[in-house]
Image 1 (tube, rainbow, N blue to C red):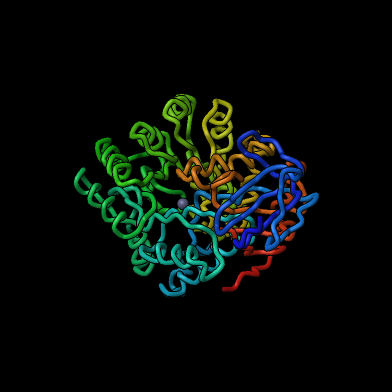
Image 2 (image 1 turned 90 degrees about the vertical axis):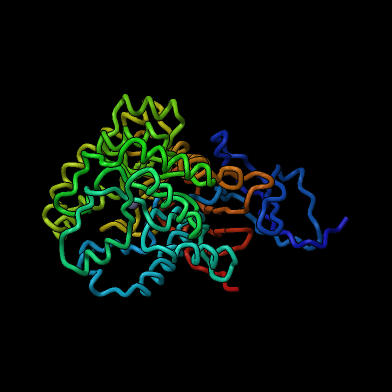
Length: 424
Ligand SMILES: [Zn+2]
């Protein structure tokens, strides 16, 4: 019987199933609208007259990959303080658009933006969701909820003016609850908070201390969960990671000084670590390091040397890992998430299969979207990457977008061999 519905059919590909880690050979995927209507072996597929067929014989099909930690407005320049002086607020929105598309052409059909200027994120999300412009799915945090202290506030006025608008300092249980509700109202998908200083925050900012009170962190988590949002927490030092874990924060970002005891707690609570190794490794490159403010360069060297060892301990213990890059930090360009997947293989000890699971189903679980994303199953959204080569045999093929014959998001072909082909 003919079906008048238009169907996009990806025929005879080798489909990576992140749930089992296996490749299902010679499988066909039927897409109707934005969803996967059917996926099964070629022999069980019935062609219909209106089908548009893509022959995927010999190709490997992955679920669209997910980067759980990007900063789309940030442009990866090492001289970030000077950059602020030459950049208008409007320009940042266009950078965000271009950077998001750069992730898309590299096979990342979903991004979680972990903070920048407020308010642009929900708009860009809506533009992409409506199919007006080719772009990935976005989850946005809007404005991070920060603590007093740790992110210091001294420096050139323009830099201060910029950085003060990137997070909101809140105090007390009522204060943080108000901030969480305000994020919900302004269109945030999740909450971003910080329990420690950052490597790039200024001179006196410490990665080792955490100034939020336990009850403030608990209030953030409780209120966010009540409103249907999860919570991501930037935490480098042990104390900050520990406090975040005890409060039940859903994803720990960076986790530089994670140890066995915290790893055990994270496993018990089912929390995710998003290691963002590429951020530290990019900062530590000599050509980047020499362009950073001297105190930031010093801090980089100390933190990066600890990170690789500690993440390995966490992984071996059994902590759940998802993929995130912190893309936008100095030297950490948008579109390089495949390098982080490779880091997981080379530095953490994942097999290529585990690394691809981390970039797909595990990342989908980390951001609470595994009901619709992260694997190729009937009823899920049709976000797919059709690779000419098999990344399970050679993980580095993911680094070159020319190896992706098609990138499909929401059932629409958006990219072919590294070029955006979707224009509404
Ligand atoms: Zn970040």
